[in-house]
Length: 164
Image (cartoon, rainbow, N blue to C red):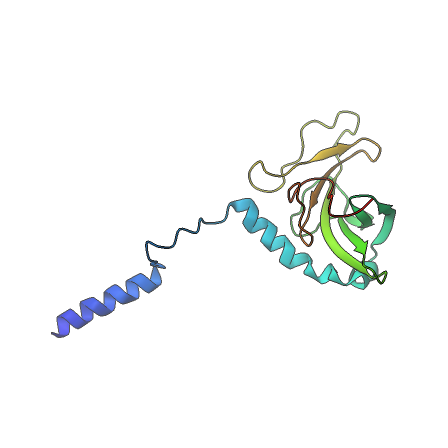
């Protein structure tokens, strides 16, 4: 009897230790890029308060851009590398009271040679991210709509949910 109890106890502990689940759980595991988006969303949630952005030296470099919003940049971190947890740009849109609401983040990566930018940088794991080269600024850019759903996709450059 004691042996059966020990075996049953070990089976229960093993199941708990190895995250046993029922066969009814058909929820697919998130893809690596989705995990990364969740990580950067959590890391940048402090920017929901625009004062956090301005207090660290970010400023509105663009004014209002249709289907994007205001681009608050930190020029001190714009370089040739992709740093998942430190996007160079935070995008805001004014609400009905004129208060800035965070809607997205943006990465701005300088190529070694802006006249010959080559391939897009390695960003999020996989091939879902949609980098585009901004010739006027000489940089690769990637938008991530972390705080406002984008019907065109989380990595689309423009968001039709934001007006003209």
